Length: 115
Image (cartoon, rainbow, N blue to C red; front, side):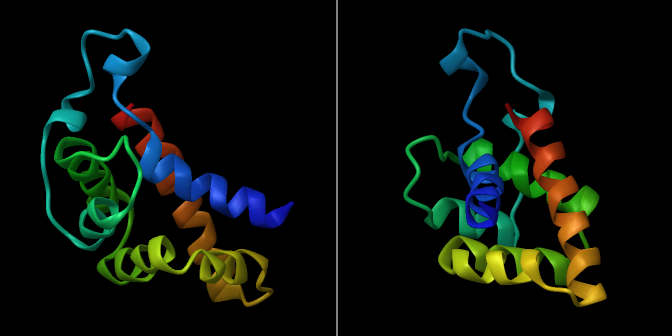
C-alpha cells in the first residue's frame, strides 16, 4: 500500500497532464513557463506520454518555490529509482520524515499549479 502511495506521488509529478486533455482551454501561467533544474531534467527523461517542456518546466518552477536545491536533487533521483522514494517514505529517520513532508507538499502544489 505504501509503495502505491509513493508511486502515486511520482505519477502526479510527471503525469499531471495538460489542462487541454481535460477540455480546459486555459492553463495556469506556470504550466506555460519553462524552467531548468534537476526536477525538469528528470521529468523530461521520463517515459510518460504527458511530459512536455512546458509541463516539466512548470513542475520545476514549483520545485524552485517549495524545495531547496538539495531536496530537488534528492527527489529527482526518484524518477530513476522509485524504490528510493519508498524507502524514504517508510523511514523512521526524522530527516527523511521532514523531507517527505516537503516532497508531498511539492507534489500537491505541482498538481494544483501545473494541471
